[in-house]
Every structure is written in C-alpha cells, then in structure tokens.
Length: 118
Image 1: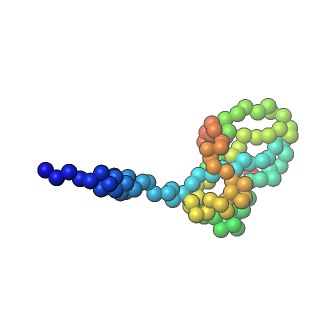
Image 2 (image 1 turned 120 degrees about the vertical axis):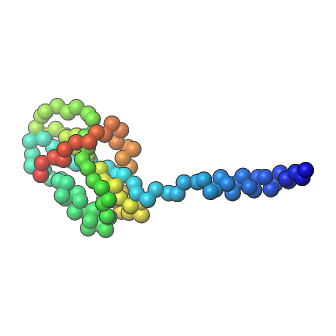
C-alpha cells in the first residue's frame, strides 16, 4: 500500500475547502431612519427615499417599512420609530451608503410595520 505524501494531503484539503467557500452575497439589506417628527408635515417620505435611490442609480430589489421596536412618548416634535429597509444589489451598496443607508444589522429589534402616511 502506497501512502500519500503529507504535502499532497494538505493541497487536496486546501482545494476542497476553497470549493466549499460561499460566494459573496448578490444583494444586501440596508436601512435608513425616516427622520420625521410627530405633529409636523412629513419631510421625508417613502417616495422621496425611493426617488433618491433611483436618482443615484441604485436599483431596489425589495423594500419595506419597519419600526425600531422602541416606544416613544406621544409628544409634538418627538421622534418616530419608522425605518425604511431596502434590498439592493451588492454592487450598489456603496452608492446607497453614501445616501445614509446602513447595514440592517445596525438596527436591532426591527419589526415590519406599515409605512407612514405621506
């Protein structure tokens, strides 16, 4: 019986591990806070956010609204919990991040929500 040289075993192991490596993601999920305040007309709407992405050449694959899961006092001038979540091609991630979108992982506790009224 012929034994394999240890270097050959190491090479075979390296090649098999490389074959198992997962490809980079084709799309990424990013989020941006909708910065409106209570009792005032909306300055930021879902439409303005989507238009901003389109003008920057970012194709949105999917979009939804979410809540950050926190409770806010009902008071005029107070913040809201709304966040816009979009799925974009990984190749467009930097363009979206330049517009203020961040990885959704930076927004723990998100729950799907109705989009705020425009």
